[in-house]
Image (cartoon, rainbow, N blue to C red; front, side):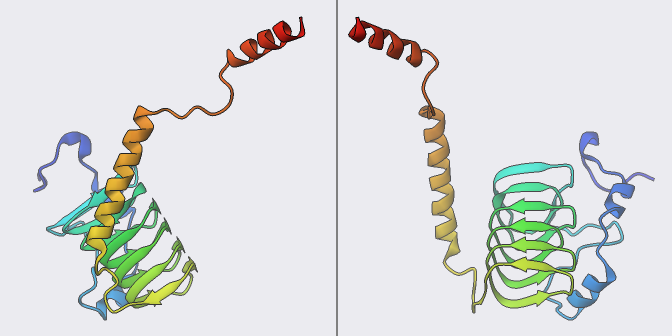
Length: 199
């Protein structure tokens, strides 16, 4: 039977790969009490507006999604989405802003969300700005936690400005290479100059 998904063959993952990243019953139970929080599919089905960055993918830059986003790979970027799920194999270095964020993997950066869930086994280093916070037993958290009525307010302009500044910095670094140390031929010129002055 052919799958209903339409993907290029190179990007198709087998069902065995998807089953390697299950959501535990503990997480399902904790999320069941809050119907507004995202629950990721466990039976191979997919959410209509879910985007996935797989465990074998490395991403750098700035990620924006209007739907749900599941991160299972290496991400060196700031992330904005409606809902973000950081899988158990994910390694995220950057700020995450969403309505709901669940972390099961490693994350280093600031999280801003109305509801933040740090699941058992996760490692989070950074600041949390939230309206509701859930920390499961066995979660590692190093940083500050601040409760806010709307932690994502006024961030669209700030995030846009930060992104624009990062783009400008990257362009400047490409145009003006920074040289560190003494150029290889500079030492010869200095020695020749010293010999002329001594002679």
